Amino acid sequence: MTETTAAEPAAGRRASVAPPVEHVLATYEIETSLDLQHAAEVLAGEQSTGTFIRVARESDDVRARFAAQVESLEELPLTGASPLPGSVGDPAKRRRARLQLRFPLSNFGPSLPNLQAAVAGNLFEIKELAAIKLVDLDLPAAFAERYPGPGFGVEGTRRLMSRPSGAMIGTIVKPSIGLSPEELAEVVGELAAAGIDFIKDDELQGNGPSAPLEARVKAVMPVLERHADRTGVKPMYAFNISDDLDRLERNHDLVVEAGGTCVMACINLIGIAGVEFLRRRATVPIHGHRAMFGAISRSEQLGFSFRAWQKLVRLAGVDHLHTNGISNKFYESDAQVLDSIDAVREPLLGQRPTVPVLSSGQWAGLAHATYAATRTTDLLVLAGGGIHGHPDGPGAGVAAMREAWASAERGEPVEAALAASPAFRRAAEVFGAPRA
Image 1 (cartoon, rainbow, N blue to C red):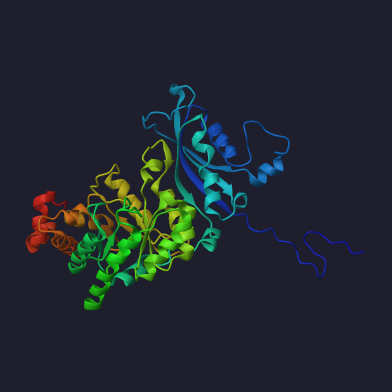
Image 2 (cartoon, rainbow, N blue to C red):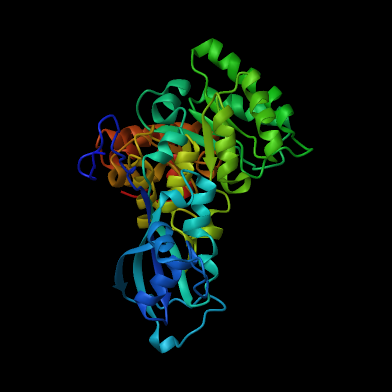
């Protein structure tokens, strides 16, 4: 018998090659009274092979193959924020660090729900941690192979709304709730005539008995179709179809069969798996609203950063994603908002670009400052009160937005835009001095 070695496989026998090991890299910011290295190892063990004590079958081989590993650990200054409720340890010994853990993809596979269980499961409940926030994720290509991402993105959205260049200008129906379907149709007609690109339901307007989804669709779509017949342009209307999962497909079909070109889903209310369920069936863009996002992100001591969360959402398939806007009415600083916009615009595993959606307190006077900070018009800018609250009506609100953004893109100072646009000047009388 002829002997073979590992270096010289027998004739006719193919040498076995181990498949490449793929990993997810998760980055956290933690605070603890434990030794930082020990705390990192506790977290890694809790989220992979470990429990509070080593058990019989937790062999060195199992740990080597499946345990999360500490990739890096960098100490950071304390923020001075209060520790999480229930945390233990000596406050005088508390330290803060940025921690990266490497998770074998074989632990969960390219599955967004199971990925979340690994990188963001029980770790928020570990009592030795006075702070724990997931701040970023690096994902392997296997996720893009399973999840197709946006079906339309920037290019498809522009095509459907006939806005090949420039900022995409939109609004939210105001009042948020309370309009009858007939009154809603009147508002939509006025906005369409003013040249709006995009209109959406408020996240509070779902499928209630006072203005059911079906009645809104029947009232709005004929108005948009008549406008398209006259002008060749059909503004995009994002109907809020958020509901129980067994109704999502039916709601989507109701909109599409009437000629609608967009549906809106509240991501955190139907879940990322719900978004993916809708994406597999959708034939129009999905407008992703982030309602309830503050519950998982507002605290610097707990939850997800927008940068980490948006990667999961984009993979699940949203075409538009709310990022907030500068000078907003909510808690985020301009720096946080601009980082969110940058994050959504960064390439992700070769998929179509998602459209950042700016909202919350937006008006024409923020166009120049926003453009100067982002240097792009691949943005969907939503002004609710900033359009509906214009002293000369919503039509003038649309004109002010359009003229201010066009001026910003041309590189003009905001003073030049004010001088050239009566609608912008009137807006400034109500909303205050524009930001340069």
